[in-house]
Image (cartoon, rainbow, N blue to C red; front, side):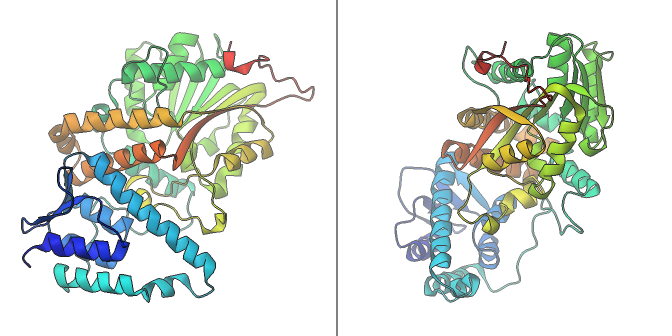
Length: 439
C-alpha cells in the first residue's frame, strides 16, 4: 500500500487521459501531483470504496461528508478542478449516448478505462461491502414527490437544522437568498438590505398594502416591508423553527400589528386577494410537475393589477429535457426534492397561469458573491458551526455553498427576479413605462 497517492493519481490520469489537475495526499502520507497548490486529502481508504460503489459526484460527496476526503488549502480551487473533470466526463457520456443506440449504462460498464479504474480502486480500497451513507443523507422517500406531507419533510430537513447555525452563516440579516451588490453595498448586510428594498420597490409597496410573502423564512422580507413601507404582511413557511424565530423578531421590532407569520403551505392560503406577492427563493421547492399549480394559486391570490415578484434559481436548458437528472448530492443532502427549471419554463408557467411577465432581471453574479460571504462566515467560526449542528452537517453546508458559488460564476446556473402582473380586462398593468426606474 506504499505510495498510495502515486497509484491513485496514475489511475485517475489513465481514466481521464490527461494529468490529474490537483495534488493528492493519501492516508499513508504519500503525495503526488502538481506541487505548490491546494491538496486533495484522502484521509481513509473507505473513500475509495464509496467511489467504487457510487462513481462520480455522489461517491465523492459521501466521502466528503464522512470526513474521509478533505482539502488542505483553497477549497474553491480544488472544487473548480474536480467539477470541471466531472462535467467533462458527463458531457462526453452524453455525446456518446447520442451517438450510439446501445444502452448507455451497459456500454459504460464495458468501458475498458472504467474497468481498469474499478480494479485499481478495489485493490487500494479493499474488497469490502459498501460503507453506509453518512447519517446526514436523506433516506428512501415514499410516495409521490411534492405532496404536502413530503414537502413538509423536505423543508424540515433543510431549514430545521438550528436557527443559531443559520445566524452564524447568514449574519444578522437572516436572509437566505441572493443579496444585491453595488450602489454602495459594501457588506453582506448592506447587500441584503438592498435586495429586500429592490423587491419592495418592484412590487410598488405602499402604506396599507397587503403583501403575501411565500416562503417567508426568518421574517426579513416581512419586517422590511412592514417597517419601511407600511405594508400589512402575511408570511407563510413550512418550517416551524423559522416561524418561531420570525415571530420573535417581529415582536422585538414592535410589528405584531402589521405582520402575521404562519406555518402553512402556500396551497392552503385562502384569504386573498393580496395587493402584492413576494416569492424569494421558494419556487425551487415546488417541482416542475407542480409549477403550474403554484403559478395558478398565486395568480388567484392577487387582486387585479397586483404584482408578483418571483425570485428563483434557474438551470440551463438541455437539448433533451426528458434526460434531465436532479443533482444527487443536492437531492440527498441539501434540498430533498428540490428542482431547478430553465428561465424559459418559469416564464411560460407564469404566463400560462394568466400573468403578464413585465420584467426579468438576471442577478447571477450577485449570488456568487453572496455565497462566498456565507462560506467565509462558516469557515471563520468553523468550530462553533460544528458545535451547533454536527461535523457532517457543517461539511455539507460548506461544500454545497462553495460548489454553488462556482456554478454561478461559471454560468452553470443562474438566478432571476421576474416581475409579473395580474392585468385586468382593460389590459392596464399599473407599471411605469420605464420599469427599471421602479418608482
